[in-house]
Structures are given as C-alpha cells and as structure tokens.
Length: 359
Image (cartoon, rainbow, N blue to C red; front, side):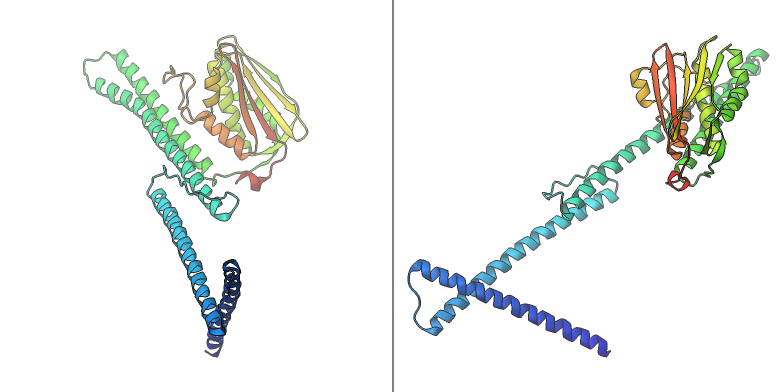
C-alpha cells in the first residue's frame, strides 16, 4: 500500500515538474518573442506591469497556438489510425482489395506499417484466388469420372445389353473409379506435404542404386513400348528421405515413358558438383512449348489437354515432385523443345539440414 502511494506521489511530482519546465520554456520563448516585436515596432512599453502583461499575453497566444497545432496533429493521427483499423476490419471480413493511400515515409515505422498492410492484402488476395482456382479444378477433375461412372452404371441397367458391351462398360467404370481414387490419394499426399507435419526422415543412401531400382520396377512399361533406357550413373550417395525421393523418380520416369514414342530413348544421367548433385532425365518424346514449361509444376496443369482417362493423370504429380524437392532444399527445372525432347533437371544438396528442410 505504501509502495503504491509512493509511486503516485512521484508520478504527480514528475508531472508537476514537467508542467513547470514547459511553462518556463514557454515564458522564455514568449519573452524573446515580445522583445523581437518591440524591436520591430521600435518602441517598448513603459513600466513593469505593462511589460509583464504583454509577456503574459504573448505566452497565452503562443501556448494556444502550440495546443491547437497539437490537437490538429492528434486529430489527423486519429484519422490515420481509424483508416488503418477500418482496412484491417475489411481484410478480416475477406475484402482483400484494400489499399491504403496514406502518405508516409517508408523508412519510419508508420510507413512500414502501411506498406505491410498493403502487402498483406495483396498476398491474401492471391491466396484466395489460388484457393478458388484449386476448388474449381478439384470439382472439374472429380466431375468428369463421376459423370462417366453415372452414365455407364445407368446403361448397365439395360437387361438386353450384350455381354461384350456390359464388360466394356464395367471396365470403364473400374478405370474411372481408379482415377478418382488416384486423385483423392494425390490430394491427400499434397495436403500432407504442405502441412509441414509430413514425416521427413533423411538418411544416407546410394542414389544410383535407387534410380536403377525405379527403372527396374517400371520395366514392363518401357519394354512394352520398346524404349531404350540409357543410364549414365555414378556411385554417389546423398542424404535425403529415400521414400519421398522414390516418389520423385517414379513420377518423372513414368511421365517420360508415357510421352515417349515407341522405340524412343530415355537417358538418366547425374553430375556431382562441389556440394550438390544434378540428375537429368531426358526423353525424345512430344516435348513442351515455352508456355507449357512455365506452368508444368502448377496443380492440375496438364500440358496435354487431350489426355484420356487411360493415359492421363490428375495434374498433381509434378506439383508433388516440386514440393518434395523443395523440402530437400533442392531445385527442379525443365528444358524442352516441342516434338523433340524434354529434360527435367533435379539438383539436390549432398548433405541436408533437416531442421531447415522442415521449415
């Protein structure tokens, strides 16, 4: 209790001293202003009291001017804050078209706050656009196989349907069901990878051995098209999540096999730099245009819009590949020429910081 009283006393004392100092400063300034006015007019008032009241009058005028200026600045600052609060409220309600046009220096904290709010609105607006586009793409991808399943299921109700057509329709229904399952699986996988809670267990293993095993597991696919697999691999180890990287190679090689013509060639090579490894997967397939190369890693993007349910995908495979490579602090790029070749370059660090990779 005594401590609280002491604090209040010192607070009141400091306030009083501050007011006294301000009054002395104002009086000092007022006295010099009065002297300057007298010198400018060329005459001075006679008598102590007349001079004192003149100084007091100037003091009052000067103090009022300062207070009015302060109140105007305070009101302007309050208007600024009201504008900022209103902008934040609109953003909270989902209006990302907010843009503050308040004049401020980008170097001070107020200017940085305005810049930060404008930047946040732009980024949130872009995220909302991507979210709506994602929902639209998911709906489109799911609607197509569902329509096929529904249509052929109705056709199967016809008791006079020939057995060969019945089997054909059942095959299509099975194929479309598998397609739906793959879309669902890839969506869950991509969501898990982006949640930053997906298991990430890097360890040392032989990269060349992993690539050979993937090629062997896909042997029926490339043998069916009589594709020549040219592997130029070295005995190289790296630190990475073996299971995740296995998905990368399976996806990239499956795409190469899918879009390489019969009797074509797929080349897998690797180059070791100082602290990185670059793996190149090249095919002499249909190739990609410059515009297609810009979007090939986007979700649901399909370079070949004429894909059927048999040879097409969900458009999520390369997005998953890109996310896995990012988790390993690596990069993936593509070079291609239409109707000639396509090469994917994957560059990975030899050693990986697990903490950084999970950021």
